[in-house]
Image (cartoon, rainbow, N blue to C red; front, side):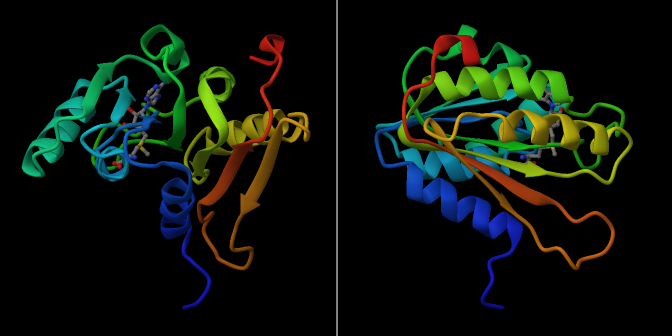
Length: 193
Ligand code: SAM
């Protein structure tokens, strides 16, 4: 298959944005797959901040990182809508996997309003040329509402400041996930947070 699958393309985008020694954010740590990927991109001289509201996710991520001898990650048991409380330095990239944690309570899901708040804060922290990737799962209860709220928000971002991409296979059944990618090209005014 020549067209990259959604999760593969998310990683391609992040690896284009993040260099060794830089910082990045995993906004939805979950089982830590993306946290590990970001930590490897940032390298020992870089840093990753990983957020999740579930202790179970923080523990799973901690375990995965320990298995790979990764020491450059701050695990934060708090919502990504508070990212600016914890991260003050410039970041090169960020990722969200929207939806619920596989194998856990399916009612604990990401929500449009907090996802949008987090995107606003991350856009302020993002370097010029940095990328925020959202993998949008929308098949679950509440998923379509979050999808539509996030799409409305990112579609309204000024194109001179942010390039906004949607990457999606449009003939797959059962609500396949798609990607929204934001590349910052110029600093945004603070009121856009
Ligand atoms: N990327 C993860 C992985 O590699 O396993 C999967 C993430 S899962 C689809 C979504 C995660 O978002 C869940 O673990 C859930 O607890 C978390 N979550 C929900 N609302 C959140 C919020 N406001 N801030 C941070 N994490 C949140």
